[in-house]
Length: 399
Image (cartoon, rainbow, N blue to C red; front, side, top):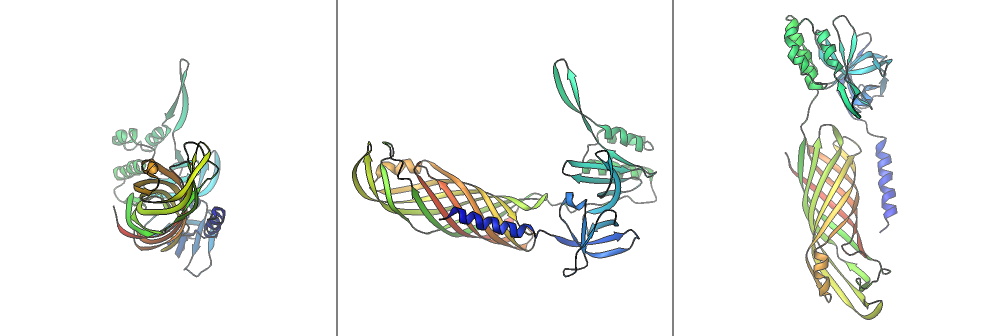
């Protein structure tokens, strides 16, 4: 098997798919003239969404790119709402699309970049203030400690001075989405009775585990390093031949709301191996005889994958990479009884690379087809295997 060829094909598919990762969802754009344009908006992630809005009227329409200066705001239907605002980022005034969190007496916004999250609050008189905590170094004797100074607490107290009854809520507020939304909404409800506070909530999905049945076939190729003959390694195999075997198992895919393309997946399955060969028998580097050999055993094969979907569509091309742990069970061999326990008691480890395609039939349920290359380093130092599996997974459910 040609590992380099397989890697070349894997990288080629990845490069072809990497340029096609647009995810257009229903939404609308509000122009600077306050006109509303309905259509589809590209959801490219929290960081990229702050820099550019990619809009098209329908699936076949050309894409129109809007920068923060070009439009007032845009929103995904029943999901995130972005509005163009001028803020100070790292001390410099810039215009960005901020995620609109709360529309009330005071407004709350979120900006995300590669350095992290920044929260901004717009006061009743139109000032845009950042809510932040600052890390400071505190020295006690010869020891230095890193301490966070919660400057946002003082900022909130100043803004919410009309509602002293919220003092405890402000003191215990944390610098995160849920806590800040709660305290800003509480302030609105305390000081404003004629206007409802609007909280723009995104669709929050829970962490889930999708379970599927896996079935397929394994093509196995055993390798042997003839150059490693020692008193402890007394067999040199020739013409190792293996048989193709079916496999069956389960796949556990861990789904998080933070990333809809990258998943962690554990896939244990069972298949039987069988091979035979001729061999030379060596003692203290002297060949003492030849013979034939055959073996059969059951593999408990566990894959730990990172799975990446190149497109977030109903039908997705996917790539896989990960680690393998294999345990040989029920090992039986002929003509070499002293190897019986040695192989059966030890683990084999290796890596896997795969290409596949998945078709979503329901939310968190999909049927997938995958071709995977496995390289295992054997329980014995002079043996390894290169396997290719073709598998189909059928969903059971998500929990």
